[in-house]
Length: 146
Image 1 (cartoon, rainbow, N blue to C red):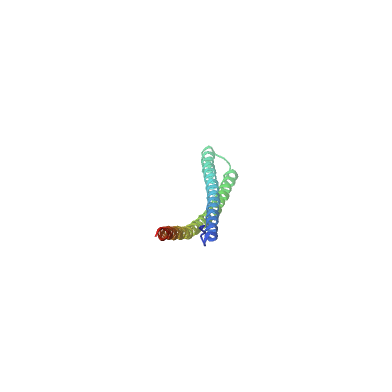
Image 2: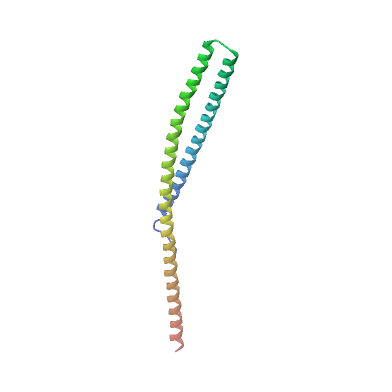
């Protein structure tokens, strides 16, 4: 008698879903890291431009140069705000995917536990059948010898 788990296809689907969720989380994490790097780069650019403005102001320069530098800093601020919003969206999406992953994992574990219990029942049934067979053989041999 061969063992067959009746929910094996569902378990296989749960496995695939779990892998897909892992990949989705990994992709979002990569995106989050890229956005963080971009934010860091923009912050450093803003900081260096601010230092440049301070240096130019101490040396003395015309107002148009300072104005254009301030406009550049303003544009960096706008980019930082935009990228921060993007980062927040990605982090929310990441949290959602993590919750989905946890849910799929729970479902998969449930089916794995069902499978373990089913295998245990199958093995017990098989053992009982073997014991009955052995009993029948012993009974048959005993009846033949008498």
